[in-house]
Amino acid sequence: RLGVEPVDVLVSAGLTPEAIDGPERQIAYSAFGRLLAESANRTYCAHLGLLAGRMWRIADLGLLGELARHAPTVGGALHTLAVNQHLNCEGGLVYLNAGEQMAELGYAIYLPGVSGVDQIYDGLMAAAFNCVRELCGPGWRPTEVLFAHARPDDPSPYRDLFRVTPRFNAEVSALRFPARWLTKPIDGADEARRRLAQQLADEAGRGQVVEQVRRTLRVLLLR
Image (cartoon, rainbow, N blue to C red; front, side, top):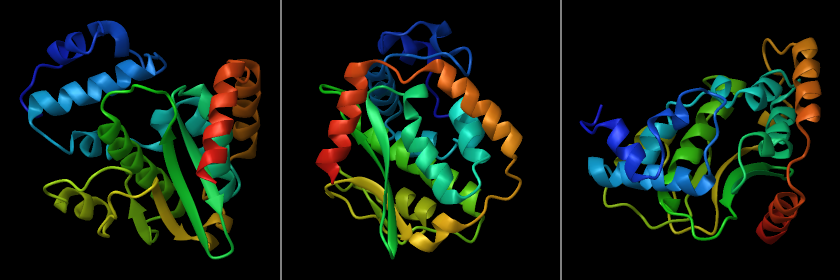
């Protein structure tokens, strides 16, 4: 859409054109960062990560999305995303902090030396916004949006998406919203489908022990 040949960008990021052919294909986290950074550079679009993330929906998360979509409540769905994120990603993590009044859904990169960090945070916050709104309904909106990177020259694309003015140069990248939304039942949740998805997730295992430790330490540092 922005006038750049996708194959050229993939190759420049060290990927083959076939690397992302299927929805269940996986690439290295470092390659993910390079792909977003290279795409932003070649298109001269500083908020390319935001544009990419706002296209994501829960169904795009595959098995992880199935687990979340059929959880009984919004809080259960977001907790499921945090607990089972190893199914989709090793390099960054989703976390959920729930207080009495406010909830915080955030994303943190723990892999060192990753390119395109700003683009990754933009993309994941946009995707998180879409996912929570899909679970809660169109009446949901964040109270505050935070980004752990510098303020862009033009923040208007961020305001247009989130309907609030984000706070940049924050310690975390996160969405904050009233905690009461966590108890909202998810319309159309199917317990049988959730159980089947959980069985498949259990069969997939918990991932590498080193990655489990890295994720745990990153969450502890956030708290």
